[in-house]
Length: 339
Image (cartoon, rainbow, N blue to C red; front, side, top):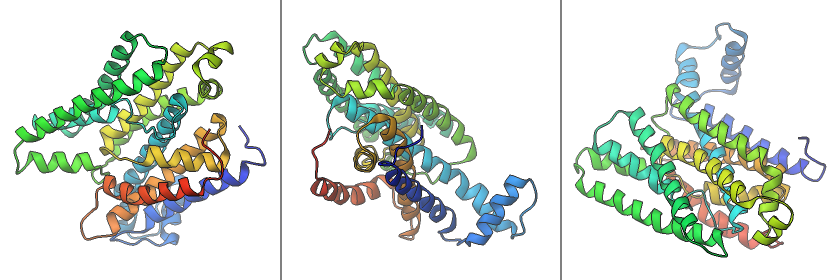
């Protein structure tokens, strides 16, 4: 859908952030790559011929940084889209993608996989299904409780189930080998894309693409779901099945992201607010803007994570350090109330 004149500057800025993040991620690092070499390698790859650059440069761009850059874009976009969907569904500006326990469930699955010394792929699979199981438990428990405010029941159930799964994470960490398993668990829980390879992209891309496509297809109905429950039903929207579809799609992309990169907070909380300030609350424009901004934002964060210090800084730490003051500034600078 072509953006209107009023949203064109916002989309232009979001795309500029994404392009800047891409260029930074592909050129900056312990092995600097010039823009000329970067464009030469990309042109050669698209044209099917050999690039006129040293083999080491081509290897760094395509094999080392390329998969990590694509993963950062996918994870950032997924978390931003999920956060946008949950904030609209729950009509709460403080909601993030882990509100229903997806991150806690994925974390428990991952630490169990590490404790059992499973392969990397198996750990990611267990983490992915752990996130889905946690949200399914939240929804089953919430649906069994009769209330005039089903959304509040879901949120409260998500807090309880998330706390339970968090306790499970603590138990597994307590039982883990403190010299080998515990450091791996701690590093994973703080979030990182350092070990991303090409085979990791397919299990990440599939769920993210599917969940995002569902949310985009439901964009018009999501506008109605932002209204109070009674008003949405009065407009002829079947709020129950629609809520299930939105939660399932947002959980799918969140679980896939957490399974690949660990727990990365603040992206799904901060980016939707920034996107809303650029293009407005209409989900037809808000979802793509959030996806673009989320991808660019995490690209910049990941570049900082691997270049600021001699050792790589976990993404979860950087997103909290940068996201907290940014979110405070964003709240202080907003001229209109959240809607």
